[in-house]
Amino acid sequence: MQSLELFETPAQDPCQRLGPAAMVLRGFALPYVQQVLPAIEVIAATSPFRHMVTPGGFTMSVALTNCGALGWTSDRRGYRYTSVDPDAGVPWPVMPEAFARLASQAAKAAGFEHFEPDACLVNRYTPGARLSLHQDKNERDYDAPIVSVSLGMSATFLFGGHARTDPAVKVPLHHGDVAVWGGVDRLRYHGVMPLKDEPHALLGSQRINFTFRKAG
Ligand code: MD3
Ligand code: FE
Image (cartoon, rainbow, N blue to C red; front, side, top):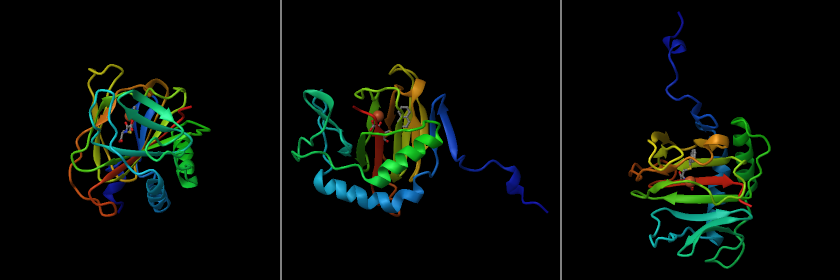
């Protein structure tokens, strides 16, 4: 007698399409976690997580740092990519091998061959932290995709349209999920709902998200 499960759809589709060129690869980063977590510690030892100020004068609830040749920063003068960490006064930490491998493998799995990011923005969320709807448009090359990796506590991602007022779809992102988006979806508005405090077994009351970009 065959098991009924064979005829049921899986609880989690391993690849969830969000748009013509946007998808979530469920659990894709899980095999990399053991290498990636200590690498984040190494990065934060040189370039600590910090709460940046937006050009409008608001302090971001998400703390961030970077690795790679270029790092994203914000202050009262605007958003931009720099090669030097303005707080530490030294170049951003080198992108770890395991990061680069994860990024290019995920991009490939989503249909983007030869993704070579030069920037990796690392976000750290604690309970209540959120990211309001925005577009990622400080990068020079909109043809390259963006790859994002979620670790730790789950979050509700908001996937909007090309105008800020377009309705947004809510997408849960869990530990190990990787999102890849490019092409016609590259400039869609997106954000993250305030993080709920549901501690994660490995990371406790935090969520780490890192996004790989071709910025220069
Ligand atoms: C955008 N980070 O750092 S990435 C950012 O979870 C940022 O920390 C968020 O937005 C975070 O700029 C979200 C996930 C994501 C997934 C699919 C997208 C962003 C997307 C599809 C289109 C545009
Ligand atoms: Fe973004």
